[in-house]
Image (cartoon, rainbow, N blue to C red; front, side):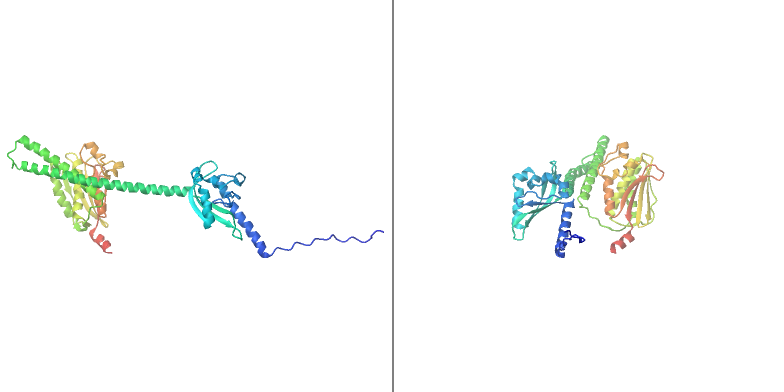
Length: 404
């Protein structure tokens, strides 16, 4: 007898009980942490077992070291160390320290799959289970090759600067010592030549006086060179002191003009000045006159017979400006910075064949800058010759700024 009852719906198995919220949260966090570690590309993050064999591998490890996960998992982490470190058992030492102290940090060379090396910062942390038993190690590696290269470059730059400073000090000390040693016999030559010129040793013939004039001229020339070397060495060594005080620049210019006038007359040059007023500046009088005398001497030296050397002065804003112009060959535009470099003689010197050390303008610019001023060169007003311009701080404004 058949059952005529209508079959009922199939039985539905009961749903699995939902995980407690705390367990679900931990599962989600674990998946997120795994995703985080596997996705990081700026750090190599992987796990080792208790013997140092690789068990996990992330994207950063693959990028740094060049191995795919299937190529490296199961191999010992000493694979990444240079042969000299493996021979010294550095990998084993790191695991022993991490085991004893909980972690170890190290920097050194590591080796990629292709054999190239990179500078790495490595942290190895011991992993222990709930009972305290060692189950493995976490290893985090950063590639610091670029940072180390920058640090090494900075160290090398510092060493070069120190070496250059030491060389400059040695050069300055040598120049100072040499200058002092040479000044003594040159002063003696000058003294004895002066005695002969005064005919205290007896009368001189015209030929002897002519020869003596040449001796005295050569002695003065050498002494100027030695003085330039001595001044330059003192400036380089920072041994010059400056007595800055309000002074009349016009008075100093007038005094220097009288010193330079005989030389200009001897060469058949016109020496003129339109400086009026005091031109009050805050400066060292002796050094200002040294700079102006050097500018006038250079202008006279490089100006052909029959030419003109002129001095112009005026107050411009918070500075006094003094310009020395000449009708000589001038200084080419592309050499106007070079003429202020020490031991450089360009343009005008090469065309005239004049002698000198090439230190005068370098010294003059250093002196001007040390007094808060500047020295520059340009073409003359009509495009001919040279125009050297000295700027010095005005006395009243400079004193007010200093007192403030």
